[in-house]
Image (cartoon, rainbow, N blue to C red; front, side, top):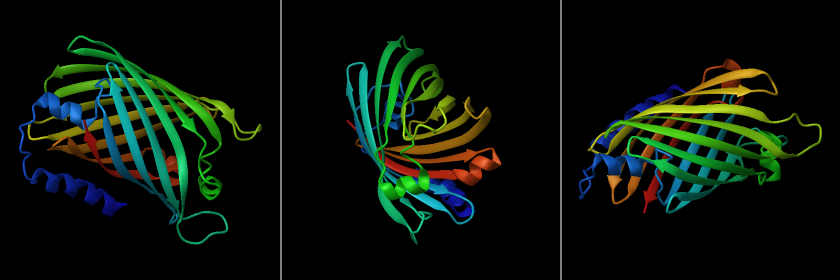
Length: 260
């Protein structure tokens, strides 16, 4: 894990020395192109690699393609994962297959300059291949996650936001699977610079009502708007609970997207 933490810290430093974009980006453009604020409606396509650094030599790599289409106050997103995992029962080495497909619909229904509100629903389809499901259990649920987002602009380069969301199953893969009842509160503070750089810190408390279990994930995010609508992002997610760190692993992400 220490090598990925070092990489995560060094890559943004390298990006900061990258050639400045030909066009000058305002703070508002950096904020929009960063994709950090979910109340901002944009169209974009993106590719990202997610590495889950698990204990006991287990690892998982997700390569995700995502597309968002913004129309007026509405945003429609679809994303699909190609998953590689090295602990598939009866198989050696990494096995690669389809992961879950997710669709998100968001409406940014209020914005008065400083305050903004958006409502969304996220639908996760159990589309993982048989081998991937055998190792990660991705097809256990067909579930829905409604969410409400509030963002507050402190100044042009600084904002805070909170997004409570609740996940529940519309259908279960097996009748004896436990119910899904998960409350997550995503909240963050984000800083933007006119050089194109941005940084975010997100503490994410989670409560599983079915298992009566509390969890907390700490997530630093750094990135840079490169100009021409392109953005480079680096992210880490570190579970605080030892059990979550062992089962899910720490997450490290690198992604690039193009906004339109």
